[in-house]
Length: 310
Image (cartoon, rainbow, N blue to C red; front, side):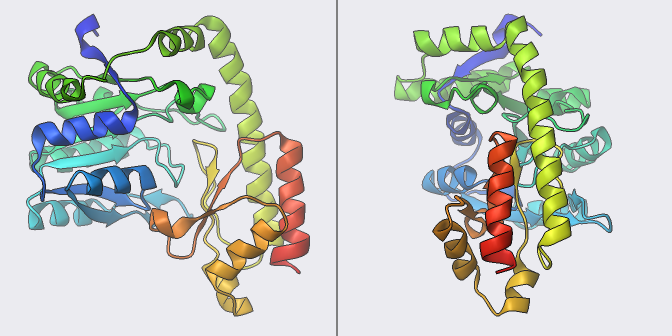
């Protein structure tokens, strides 16, 4: 990689929109997988683009998988030439295997799609899984992908606003940089620059190794607890990120409750969780496990006693 391949972006979503503005027009369709991060939904639709969803599907082991035939069909039907690929995936927590990325990139290549790869979660990989950068799987992937990264999720630096792109293809890079410059605000500030440098020093990597251990423990504890105690709640253990996305549809049906009633009952006992419908999870709830294990235990106990088994 050379120096010119790396460039500043005023937030990952800013980089997403700069790329879409460079290669699509208002009214054009963009392919995303669903469930879908709400930040994508709002920024893409607010920029005048249409979202076409290709749903992820759970296999026989409860692992979220891409449906490549569905992706190809929807790209062709809507004449799509730009796709957003979330790796690791938010909110499902999948850390894609190399063969999965290779297969997805072949679909994109066959349909001449520019790929925007959001890899902001790439440092938070759990339980020994390994992140594969999208641009690394083939020469074609290297040249059709705008990859976006930031230290914000990993090191809690979101308030400083500082992200970056990696773009190997000079044509893509020139177009994206031209769009990013239009606002006149796409310049790194001094605080975010030094925060990023500090985060990526050896001390930051040592801290990150310890963080991954803590988050892996939190995820393992929460998923085991849900499987043992919350009948009718289904959760696929995330391989990355610190988010859970349990499906509570069966529990709601068994208890005659709505998702709104379930959400309220959690908030009423001090468990802050998020409506999964805005992420296109019809009966899901999004939970953040970036907490000390003691707080995760407390939350699970409250949900057990006052909500799911009340």
